[in-house]
Image 1 (cartoon, rainbow, N blue to C red):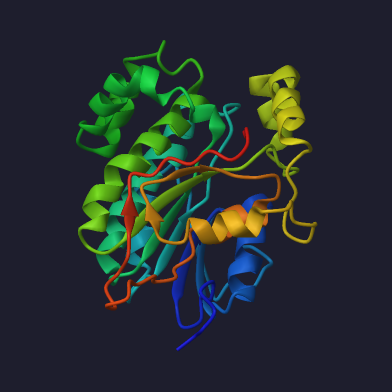
Image 2: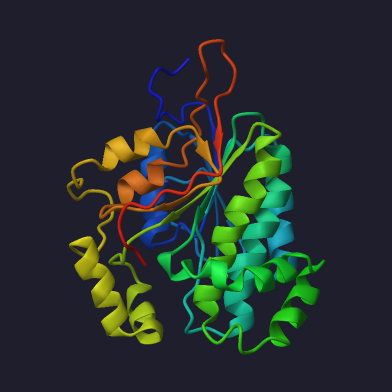
Length: 289
């Protein structure tokens, strides 16, 4: 048995959106932590150490379902990292950033053994979820992919900033799904990185404005960095402190590495060997985007 609580040795991992940016860094990190069975779901095949690539357009329901059906056997960790910026059409943003995440989570969690974990890349852009909670819950109650998109089309004012609303949905979904998942010994958490030097950053500047992005960077101290850059003091301690939590929305610190590690598939237990989970925590570290 691995003694490193961060180890992914012997675990089967699924990552969405690992072709570039945070997802590519996550793929390298999980591999470095011992995972030797990593499936990537994305439009383009990554150059990193994936064991298997499943090509899929996550804005397309049939392709999402096909990707799910292509994954057999147990899944110990699911990282819902794929996402698109608000420069794309509303239906595309909501399909990738909300509907695909929900479908992957609900279907693949059925293949997760006790102790499994689900990580969702959310955003501080979703910080206003409470102001739209009633509408988000109404959307969650809509049954079906196409019906959900029809509901979205019928509420254009609500989706004037589709990216932010999609991330509000992810923050609420993290909290609401954690209870049911916890009853089966699974954990659901989301992370909110600071602005990061990835191919999506120019799109965020276009839709959110340079002023908003620069404010986030100023509050964080610097633009977010991918693994390979120095840790900010305390990042790893924060990651360890969140080891056993579920239902949390973690505003990530300045470097991405600690944020990515938080949703690892370690199985913390109490003194009697029982799975030790915490539910409903809300933790903020630094402003992020």
